[in-house]
Amino acid sequence: MAISTLTVRLDRRTGAANFLVHWRDPAKVGHAGGLYQVVPVGVFQASGEASWNERNDFSLWRSMIREFSEELRGGSEDYDSERGPIDYDSWPFAARMTDALRDNQIRA
Image (cartoon, rainbow, N blue to C red):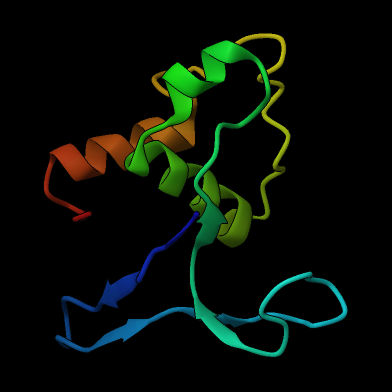
């Protein structure tokens, strides 16, 4: 099962809104090649095989954070979570996103 997140950007100055899509290069993907898709999209799964990742990662919000990092920031899909669970509170990007959600600067 995958999560498709419609990311809407609002320009508060002009009131204009737009949303992000990406093209799935059929030479690089095994599914849905040649289609445009919202950003981010990702399989709803833990970040690694270790059992602690299930408890730590199975959250729609945390899955979206990882996908935003990977697809919009070029981050790696390897979170080294076989050695220990991702510490979302101390990961600067995740902490900023979660703070912005809490402060109503972004909505999910």
